[in-house]
Image (cartoon, rainbow, N blue to C red; front, top):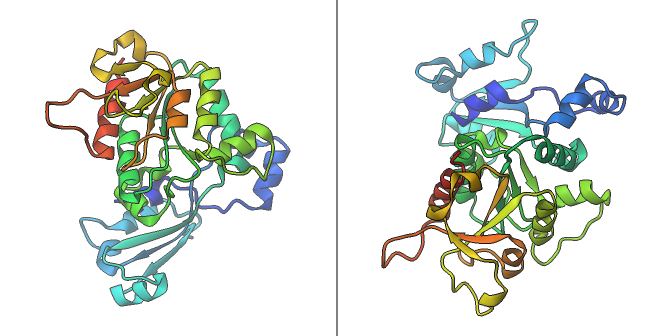
Length: 302
């Protein structure tokens, strides 16, 4: 299903010099590039025969819808499992793989898009991830974010890659439906510096400070109110259950931390509030994807 979604939704033309020229001259491509980050561009798909030709999958039906002038916009390679594994360089157990070009957001107005969307949209829903290192967890979060209409996900520079194949697979392909930026992409667009060094906090503390200046409420997800010895320097703690509809109608960014260590202290300090999920006695935590889903759903109430 991840490959099917990519065939249906991905752009099929590579971002070449012609597109860049159109953008620089302010043509239609320039307008679309500034309105939203560019999609992943699909180059080829690799399929087993039954996946491509036979029900219930029949990817050929989706490919035929993309055909123009009797020509497929991307390569389609159909072969046995052994042949596809040799091409890919690893064993292929599933029925299909897709190969595409991942966008580099700062080169395509990622910062400008984020800033303009925050200013124009009455309620912005953002997710920020601090040093999340498990690609399966990230994929699950992305899938839930797509389902709950999250506008964008911002990853610290030291978080794992959202386009790693396990993350793409677990997201069921929805990695292409949610704009995903790294802090360095925002910082380069913000400062115009193409050689910005990574900060100790993966740049996320700096980004949170910028978000607050844009009137975005930043909430750090924590397990309890004893997260470190410097409790007095922490922002106030609230529970998800205590939020009212008026609170969640403003733009917000929920910050989630590393699976083992949570959010770094310097990032928490920059947030407006800490937020926790009330749990039964004896249960001290939830898995990251489950906690993320509960928080996104609770904060998304209108």
